Each structure stands twice: as structure tokens, then as C-alpha cells.
Image (cartoon, rainbow, N blue to C red; front, side):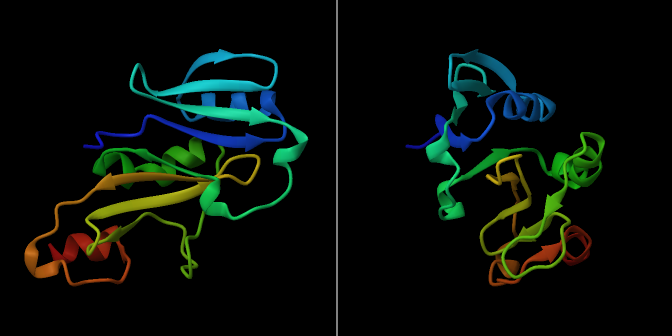
Length: 150
């Protein structure tokens, strides 16, 4: 039934700063009005709405402020260099202290996390083919450890 992301919305403190940030990520600007801006994630299929306002400045649970962007496996492998090239710092996820991309074998995906200028949680994520014999692994594995297993 679900084929991909239709839209996601994030609160921002300064629309101009956020527009520049999401342009650096390579999203194509769709339109803007006084306090909102939209970017295409996949043109004609999914987009991201940014909403500026004082009411968005109060902290609330990060799961309400999260977007995952689908990327390729190779793209995710190169994500640290790409984020560095656009001056974006990756962040650790959950109890992990490491910031590099990781694989979740039991979920069949891999990702890396970073924040936008307003602290919204962003993720680059891809699907990973997992052999049946490895689907029991619940720990998060580095790409190196994952590739040594498969």
C-alpha cells in the first residue's frame, strides 16, 4: 500500500536559514509563502514542509521532528564525506556514541543521523538485503563489520 514518503513537516525558527540548509542537502525548492516553505524530496511524489513560528521553538519529543530520506547503499557508505563536504555534522543515534553509518540486520536497513539548524532529527536511510541466517542479529553493525559478515 505505502510506496514512499508523501510529505513530512518540520518546525523551524528561521525560514531563511532552513531554506539554505535544505538546499545544501540537495533538495529542490518547490515554493514559499510568508512562514512556510516546501522542498521536493522526489519531485511530484514527496515533499518536505518547513513551518516558521515562535510556537515551534519549544522543545518536544524528537520523534515528532524526524524525517528519513531514502538513499542508496553506496550513497550511505559515502555519507560521512558528503555531510562533511556540506559542513553538516553527523550525530550518534540512541545509545551509540559512534557517528558513522550503521546496519540494522534484523530490520533490513542502514542509516546515519544528523540534525538541521533547529534540532530536527534527519536520517539518510537505505534498504539492505539480509540473508536469512543473519536476520536474528539485533545489534547495530558498522559497514565494515556488516560487509565482513556477508
